[in-house]
Image (cartoon, rainbow, N blue to C red; front, side, top):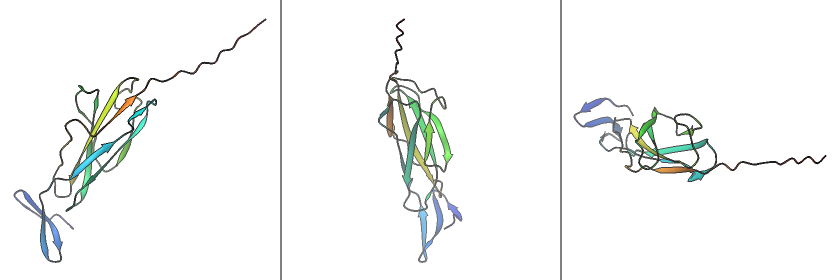
Amino acid sequence: MAITEDEGDRVWFGTNAGVEMYDTTAPTASASSPDKTSEDVFLVSWSGDDATSGLVSYDVQLRVGSSGTWQDWQTATTQTSATFGPADPVAVQDGHTYYFRACARDRAGNVGLYAPQGDCSTYIEAHVASAMWLIWIP
């Protein structure tokens, strides 16, 4: 299949048994991450679906806290996962929740919508410091 012609808001991308096919439907995508962790590094994954022309890339955004501002993290990526933290793209801190959302782009140029509240979140539990006591008795 190849995108060969633009007809307004319809992009023809090929034929199927001699029938011309147009893709005007945006793809879907969502992100996933652990619900909680005590680590300052964790994996965020995303996936999507497009029934007609196929996916070409993803955008993934992040937000720190429920009232934070969404910011781009992965743009026009063909990857389906990335490691988040410890300091990139933001410093991961105990007691904070990190929200993620994804959208996809298809071969016809349609772009899906982000979920307004995000697809998933990860809460960073406090690190438990281990202590070893050494007692010296003379």
